[in-house]
Length: 235
Image 1: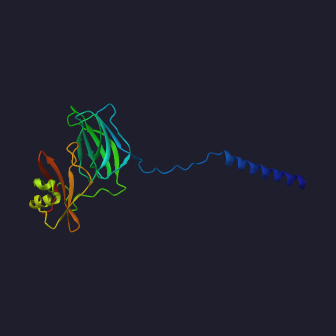
Image 2: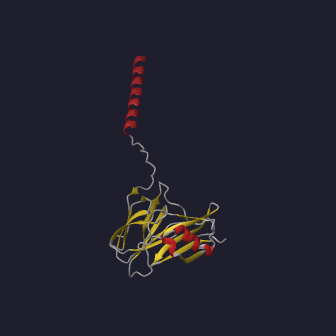
Image 3: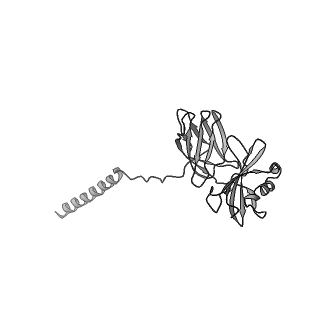
């Protein structure tokens, strides 16, 4: 009798072990889900404005020495509006069906809107993308003092700007408070080139005692140079 009882106990234990092993093998397992990574980088941000499909393609793009690479597809005369917290808005018109540009967009996340000819003030939101600066090319230009736009001036720059940019700016900006001891230097994308379309001014910053006191955007209108000054260097 004891032999039979012992055999039965061994059989029950063996069955339990086999059942547990089968349960662990056949039961569904929880597969860990990887955490979402950063936005994938693209070679160029593609923006479709004014066609049947108005979208932004490409999550993020690396800026180069002359700006952020953007491919624009759209109707002639359409207007693109770029906005990003802490950066000046940027607007450009579409003058050709397809064009690739290097835009002076600061590192950060940008929203894009599109207004097509005949739509009036209506701007359609297209999407967002990120400009990254892994090589730390971009030089900050917003004033450290009052918010940009609190003090703003537009003035003529001496014709000598073509030959001596910094000297002409020191001369031309003296009337708005720039001192001879202030440092004026190229900022933003320092290798960018002046363009009318899309608008790409030459951007400078005025530094005093280690602080940025003004941002200067220089553009050309015909044969005359003009400077838009944002900030209060006279204070």
